[in-house]
Image (tube, rainbow, N blue to C red):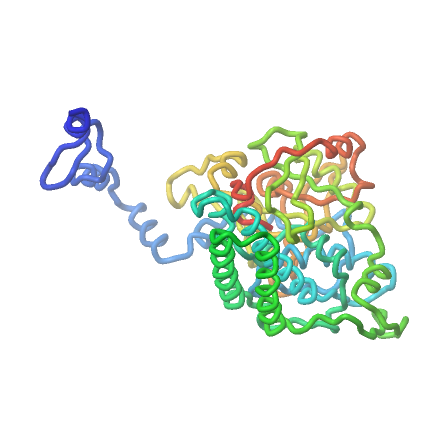
Length: 466
């Protein structure tokens, strides 16, 4: 009786379609007519309709006044040599981290456009992520398939994206090699097909491990099966990127091609000689996320590259703190790893970013009022791309006017491979900054030691992790 009464109260049949009594929940013919009547295209509106329909909105919305504001002079700038190109891959996090690490080496030895091998580090990144996924499947094997963590794992078994702390875990564990020792391959440059295949294989293996666990296999048996699976993954990686060198001979040359030394190295000994510092103990991670409490530390669950590695742990701070640390680092000729929502308000042809660069509101006749916190919580903005922060322009009062990053999209992208960003753009779209401890104020260094609040892997800000 109650069920019948509920149905009578809530729905009725109108013209053969179900309609909700208390308000229109679907688009009816009456509502559609109201919508049609709400917009009458006449005169200039009709011309604008035609223009927007026939052109890229970016072209029509470009603020021509921004051409005047675009300036490439900087009060403080770190020398950069050799723009890199990640091509059709999501390895910006790795390119940015290695570019930050190569800068002191280039300066110390007066090198030319020296580059560490991205393929070498990426090989082990993908191997470690495969193991992380398979082990996480084993660790959560008793949970149902619709458990949020299990569901997230199968949705995200592998990625070519990543974080600075993930890069550091790979580099300190496996070392680095020069680009010539393990050059780029097609599959490294264009990861789409490779990634699709390896993710399919990992999902298959994940289901197999869950089936074995359901049949009562113990942990030792599951680990043995995982080892067998990893041999197949390793073969796929070798076919895609080549066999990583365990030992190599290398001649270091300066910018004039003069040989400085010729030695035999392992990847770890090359790292120790030319990077030569404890990377895990040298940096602190900061975030600007106004949707959360400031001066609190947070940790992202499963946000790491190796099973024995470190999740992304950061202190959430206001932009003023982030800028002051960045300025101190750049003034001392030290690049920084940063990540942002790079596609927002960016003129990719010129390599200039500013919140007012496009007047979309004018051509569509609507406002876009969401602030940074609202964009984060609604998935409208997140950390999508990592780059190397290497210049700032300060006014007479030491206040930042604009910034510049070394990008990894090739020298023909943007402003000769760089992107210039207004200070206002940084406020709106920068999320992460990695800072060497010597440039971190004591107060923030102490706050970074707090026990972090654990956030889930599917947190809105990290849905497009970089």
